[in-house]
Image (tube, each protein chain N blue to C red):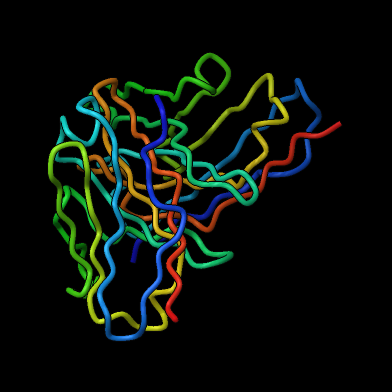
Length: 119
Length: 110
């Protein structure tokens, strides 16, 4: 059974940094593209970015609002996906979900971790 | 990239069918057969219901079906059940290696 467990959320001041983790199990992590999706309180879903598997080059793509501030990476030895978030803004406040990614869709989702950016 | 357009809410009685529309452009919905639909119950993570416009993941009831015409995709739920009451989001691949979601539709089962 695929399991994705996010951690690392919390309260951070504007301009601060935070790193989210997503521990994966139940599948061969190094063979699966992964992505992050967020949801602001009471709002809809917003795609954050995606990382290709290393055999496909390990490239990353990001949504415009986070490009240049957020970085997605993986540690295949730990079956873990990361989201490094820098220069955080109030509008980055959201629940962040990690997902598996295939055929243009987010197939399996974690339970999410809440990031609150506030002074 | 602008969000895809969905109706804010739809409703139906148990046993009836409802259809949720998702309108984009030729740069997303109309340009690729990578439209997906997600169901989200309050306080829960989203769940994939449809991918590649018409395909259902294992375990999703065949009461859920997807289609697309031009720049508009649709999710149809037939034989409505109480547990179908949830928020539904469409999503499309775009030409710039990214995904775009719709604003979400709240389905009420009367």
